[in-house]
Image (cartoon, rainbow, N blue to C red; front, side, top):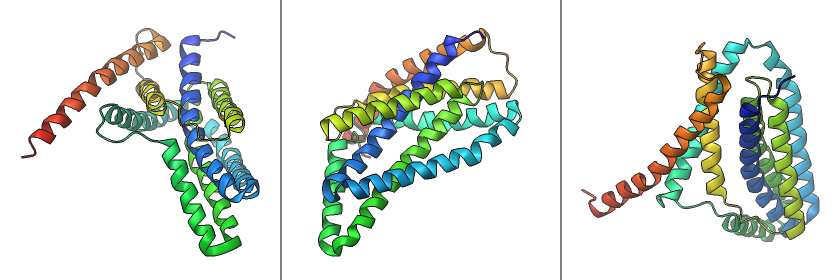
Length: 253
């Protein structure tokens, strides 16, 4: 079997980086729960969330094989485009200082304060609230990871490298998080989202075209061209957005 690294490497990278961002955000909430109410509700909520995600994958995963490949590629491509452009847009706006950067330390402090206030009002019942907070964080962020893995990997037999990327990201965040026992605030989240947005959008264009029967020049290598195009467009959009925002602030009329 010949491995097409021009497709495998971007798929694995997109899955790894996207999963890294989502897992960091989930870990921040779980760590806040553990810090305020101890390990029991944090572990209970996390295990419950992972169990639900596993059941979802087992229930819907086999259905993918029954979808005609052209329909699957088109649907996955459109979803990747929507998902990737959303990430890329937010990353551009944050890089241009139009919207604030996501701050894991601030998110940790806010979640800790909320759980602390709930504890002072409700006593031991807060353990259920804390476990639910951990459960929701794992499920919501985990669903995005599952979607990205399936979307990136389902189009052309890339589920294995996409899954490897996601598992590696989870393992990395867990290992670092357990070692430092604090929010991973130094992770360059916006830069990661910028790169992931580019990769997902590039795959989205490619899979959408494949689903429509377009014979891309260069075959799978055209993905690298799409990545380069969106990278340049994204980099040029940052100063352009910053300038537009500056003009609007100085000329509100």
